[in-house]
Image 1 (cartoon, rainbow, N blue to C red):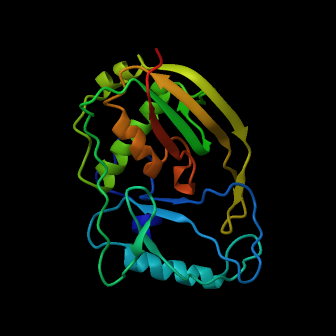
Image 2: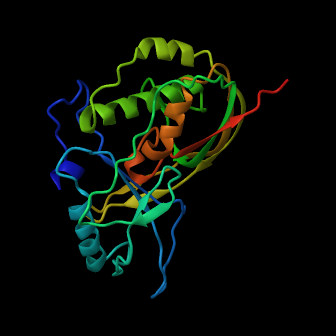
Length: 251
């Protein structure tokens, strides 16, 4: 329980009173949904804690127990009927075998050799980006990349192979040169209610698409990792999922 929900790593960076949890729980369905008896649904769970002992077996047992106790507003009981290991495309590859640990997906972060001049980013789930303590009004690339870089680096430092060996300030200066050339975003309102405290927490943000131009080759691996890690606030609850598409530069 402590490793997932109340982690206190020894190498916690300064300023992190509440370290990021080593998982993302995500469903792409937005809004409230009522399930009828016999109906099924699915969700994704991404684990970033790669330290031994692995957590997949105990976590699967916990999900089965929680499902039996009841989920959602009406505490409806459910049965976990299948758990699959995902591939690099985030698609089911094969059933999870609790007797053997699943292979760890390693996300490459090295800059691409081939030039990338234009990308389209789709904000799949509500996304909130903070800048200087305030919610950023638009998807400025410098802010987007800074939040994504910090999240990837912190997860790696706390639960993986250690801090990223990169020059953060130099990356930030180059990210500031990337231009936002098209944006079609819409605000989304959502919330969740804690069964433990009864408090209602907002889960809103913006969804939609934005296109960027510039020298993007070194940023693309981070953007692709953003599908798994999420970016911005409340990523543990599935916010901030982004998909990145490389576009041909316009003449």
